[in-house]
Amino acid sequence: MASAPSARDKALNPYDVSVNALYTEDKWREPFAWLRANMPVSLREESPFGAYWSVVTHDLIQKVELDTETYSSSWDRGNITIADNVNDNPFPNFIAMDPPVHTAQRKVIAPAFGPSQMVKLEKLVRERVTQLLDALPVGETFDWVDSVSIPMTLGMLLILFDMPFEEWPDIKRWSDWGSGVSEDNLNDDYRAEFLVQMGQMLERFDRELEARRKEAPRDDLLSRMVHSEAMGNLTPPERIANIALLIVGGNDTTRNSMSGLVEALHKYPDQLEKLRADPKLAVNAAQEIIRWQSPVTHMRRTTTRDTELAGQLIPEGSKVVLWYISGNRDETVFKDAERFDVTRENARRHVAFGHGIHRCVGARLAEVQITALIEEIVARRWRIVPQAAPTRLASPFLHGFTAMPVKIEID
Ligand code: HEM
Image (cartoon, rainbow, N blue to C red; front, side, top):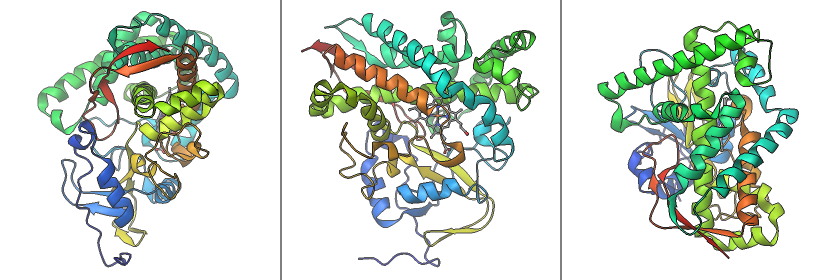
C-alpha cells in the first residue's frame, strides 16, 4: 500500500475532474473513487480552468468549509466556482463574500426561509405540485425536465419574489444563461449575449425593487432586501448579483434533484415499492435524492495564506475545489454509497448543501418541494418510465439534465 503523502510530496491529480465529458457521459464515479482512495487532496496543474486543488472526502470538505479565514469565498480573491469570473464585472453577492458582510446580508435573506414562512410555503408548494402533475399526459411521452422540474422550481421562485407567473419564461431564460457557462461557450459571442441578458434582467428587477421601496415592507424576498439596513443601499450590480444568486441557487439545483429522482427510482425500482409501502419515507427519500444527485458538484474557495491540508502544502492564492459529488459517495460515511436507498439512516449527513456559514439558505424549501413531489407520485401510484437516455448538462458545476423523455404508467 502506498504511504500517505508527506508535505514534501505533492499529490498530482492524474484526472481532470473539471471536464464536461465526465458529466455528460456520466463517468465521474471512477475518478472520484480513485481520488478518495489515493489522494484526498490533490493538485491538477492543467485544466481548461487553470491549476486547481481538489478536496474529495466528506471530512476534509467540511474541515475546509469551517476554516473561512484560510479558505475565502470572497469574489475579489476569485470566483466561487472552478471557472474564474466570466465577465469583467465582479458578481458581488453574499455567497461570494466572507464575514462580516456575508453575515449581515445572509441575515436579511434567511428569515424568508424560517419556520413560519415554511408553513405558508408548504401549502403553496403542494398546490403547485398538484396543479403541475394533474396537467401531465399520462401514457404519452413527454419531457420531465420541461414539464415538471423547471416549472415547479421556477414557480416557487416567483412565489418567493411575489411576482406574477406570466414572468416565468423570461426568468427561465436568464437563469439558463447564468448557469450555462462552461468551457465550451466561453467565447466572445457568448460573453456579449450574456451581458445583454443580464442587462435585461437588471432592468426588470430594478423596476420591481424600486416599486417595493415605495411600498410598505412585505414578507417577500425583494421587499426584505430593499427595506433592510444591510441590503437596502446596495449598488445596482450588487442588487442584481443577489437576485441572480437566488434565481440560480434556488432553481437549477432543486430542478436537477427532481429529474435525478426519476433516474434513481428507475434504477432502483425496489425503492419505489418501499415508498408505496410507507409513504412517510418521502421525507428521508428527499434527503437521499439530494445526496445521490448532488446537483451542485462543487464550490470553490481561494486560500488567503499558505496552508497545509492532509499533508499537502497549499500556497496562498490557490484555487481549492470542494467536490460535494465525491463527498456524498464517501464510503466511510455512506455505506454502499452508490445505492439510492430511501431508508438510509444518515442520508441527511450529505454535503450537497455545503457546510458551515454558507450552508444553503434555501435547503428547507428545496426539501419541502422534493418531498411533496415524491408524496404525490407515490399517492398516484405512478411509475415514471424513461423512454430514451436523458441528456445531461455539460457543466462541471451543476450536475443535472437538459432533457429526460418519460412516460407515466399507473400500477
Ligand atoms: C448556497 C446547494 C436550493 C439559495 C448553497 C450552496 C450549495 C447549495 C452547495 C453553497 C454552500 C457552501 O458554500 O457551503 C443547493 C442545493 C439545492 C439548493 C443542492 C437544492 C437541492 C436552494 C434554494 C434556494 C437556494 C431553493 C433559494 C430559493 C441559496 C443561497 C445560498 C445557497 C442564497 C448562499 C448562502 C450563503 O452564502 O450563505 N446552496 N441549494 N438554494 N443557496 Fe442553495
